[in-house]
Length: 221
Figure (cartoon, rainbow, N blue to C red):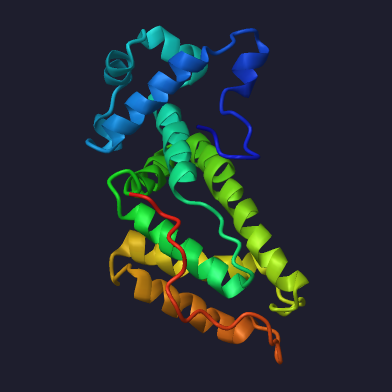
């Protein structure tokens, strides 16, 4: 359930000799996903997770410091399973497909937990730091691959700061998600990436055509 290239939240605990049971861990994460898709994060308790997973609450606390960390692991696993990184031969199309998939995920009952994690982090700086490390940085590492491919093939201007450009790709969607002032759909995703690439595309690039037709589906509800 863990995303690639991300260290487990409980690595420090494991080093003290408490090895997880794979079956119990999967049961806990599946139970947490089930509850998160039906209740707000603040209403999901460690007792409820333990009951549904068929384990003791002590088992949960052996491997996670609190239920918010369990929820974060479950959320990341759910997103990783549903949102992939495309490789179409065009960075513009890759980012468009990926933004569509991410937007579709955030509109699901599980994806909506994202806003609750942000809210939880306002009163728990430690959790917010782990959220950035486990979620933001891991997802940016994956998106950075798409960016680098575009630069390497001469599609994207190499002098641009990729970190800023990635903020510009995903920032409008996150802002709309949090503020609720605009729509989130496939058309908006295409428009956001198209507007951005009109500025970042290398002049004279004659590779893959700009995004015009619907890409292969990479999001499964």
